Image (tube, rainbow, N blue to C red):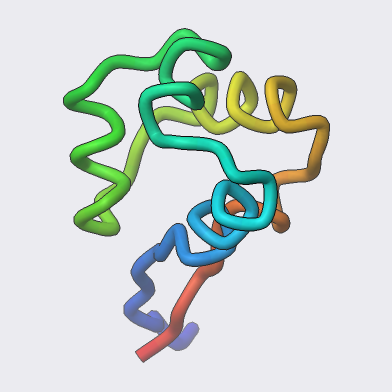
Length: 72
């Protein structure tokens, strides 16, 4: 079995926010997420699945619309 290293990035999420003229503060409020969670996402760190689900529900989109998995 080959073990690949992966990381996540949230570029698709930031693009959605720009396209919808929505701020990160508005996202925090609508998805009920904390500032520290947004900070983690800005730095492309992993966040809990339930956070990603809340964001998807708030933006009416799918998981692959807000996060990319990068292999290296």
